[in-house]
Image (cartoon, rainbow, N blue to C red; front, side):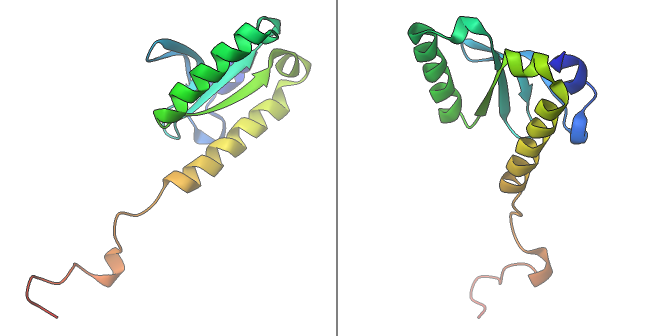
Length: 115
């Protein structure tokens, strides 16, 4: 259900499904904002799974990838607000990741020896 919506590129963001990342395979991934989306079902409701999920999230974070986890029940109840929230997260990350390298309006840097 979620993939059907994400493949439509909501908010102009392109998503990949079953994207490899190191030793992991991400449920969904938006490369432009480096966001992993993990849909967690009942298999994630035990201590061992929670530890594995924490290790995965830590590895992704160290590699500059944010993770958002969504309960599968939430997706099944009503996918629309899930997609809206994912787009909000993408826009937030896009705003934080988009920084100009220099100020072109102020001109080039002075040459060596010029004041």
